[in-house]
Amino acid sequence: MRILAQRDHSRDELKRKLQLSSQRAAYLQQQEAVPIPEELLEKVLDWCQENGWLNDQRFTERFIQSRARKGYGPQRVRMELQQKGISREEITQALYDTDVDWGQCAADVAKRKFGEPLPQTWAEKSKVQRFLMSKGFMMEDIQAIFRNIDD
Image (tube, rainbow, N blue to C red; front, side):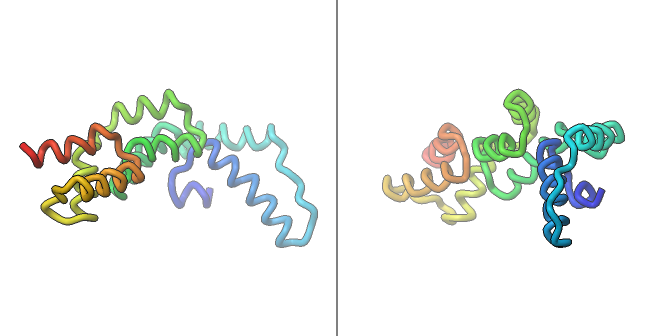
């Protein structure tokens, strides 16, 4: 309950944390770690889902919003969600359903990092592009920033 009270977690992420916390407790007590039986762990996770405390869809939506506010693009968000155990289909649907304007988000990140107006020389533009790609933005969103400036 303490873990879920801090923030939303995916099912796989919570499962991993529960397994680690049992190992950590055994280490602190200087005892041999006894893994939590898989069926007990699944029961606890199912119970949390039934009570609405654990919801992968809600977690995915909130995670996308949070990472977008922090200046990360859809590719980076997709990768991080996959690492947290969310299926590709769920991620694709959540990214499709989100109201995040990735193009505007990319423009905001670029302006915050490089100032306004954005660089106009080829070398400076490529630096902006590399930076935005490292943050996980799609090339069409990055190119749209410069297309809008040129227009």
